[in-house]
Image 1 (cartoon, rainbow, N blue to C red):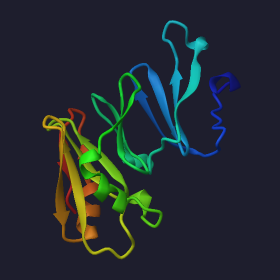
Image 2: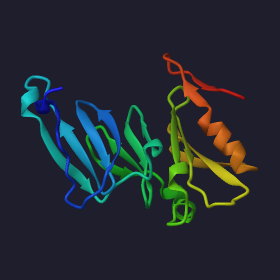
Image 3: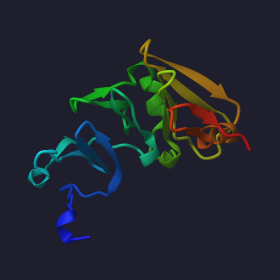
Image 4: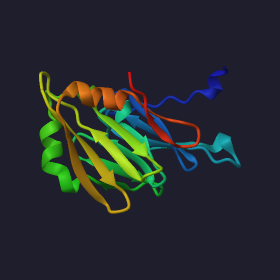
Length: 180
């Protein structure tokens, strides 16, 4: 690939790339310390622009980012957010914020964070990062039509991990759980 096909993204605060998602005609870059928007106009791709749209906003993990029809959801350090199609950052976890903050701590295993969008039923499934040696945990579900969160408690971390790691979607958007 020619060097002209590469764009270097430098966050002045430092940090690595956590995830990439497309949003409308933009490419959203989730960095460790901010969200960047790469706009490449289809009429003139050479006139691309890159801007940091939300400094200090960052997801916990690449698997804590999910694209929906409304935009891109992600689990941040202090809340669950929606980056909507107009590039506005909207907090979505206010109903469960105290619980969310109790799970998302410095000692939590953030790589265990997951968001999974169920398009058919208009629901967002969220698994919180958990502490080592925890014996039970919760799966939070956001009902998009009703705009409410509810909690589903599972008896063991193993059940939750199995549940999330084995979810998949076919090319028609149907969700499936693959049992072992």
